[in-house]
Length: 141
Image 1 (cartoon, rainbow, N blue to C red):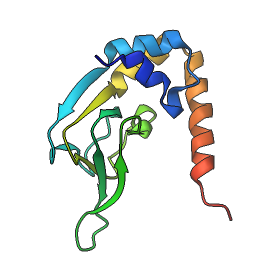
Image 2 (image 1 turned 120 degrees about the vertical axis):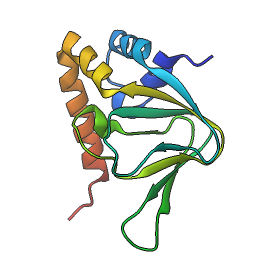
Image 3 (image 1 turned 90 degrees about the horizontal axis):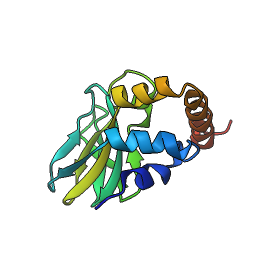
Image 4 (image 1 turned 90 degrees about the vertical axis):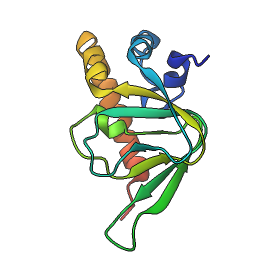
């Protein structure tokens, strides 16, 4: 059985949060199974949840209007996507589908927001961690 709190604690963007906060997030998270070839999220759909791969492999596809969608990344257990959905409303920037049977831990934005309201100091933790992540991937001039 997957320990959801441990999964969340190992995720880079959440690793600075207090364990109590992660435990509460784990109680409102769900595990979802996906069959090989099944779509997890579609590019352009509203981004309303954060996902952590717990089993299997997913592929990330982008359709930039060319010859069709192309695989731009693969996600194995421990990888995550949708972290920006925790911060703001917006559309998915890619389609994610299961390359093989897979499972993800899913944390809905509404549930995450409820936990932040219970512990407002955690919002600062998230902002700091995401700013570091953005700076780490931003191309240098």
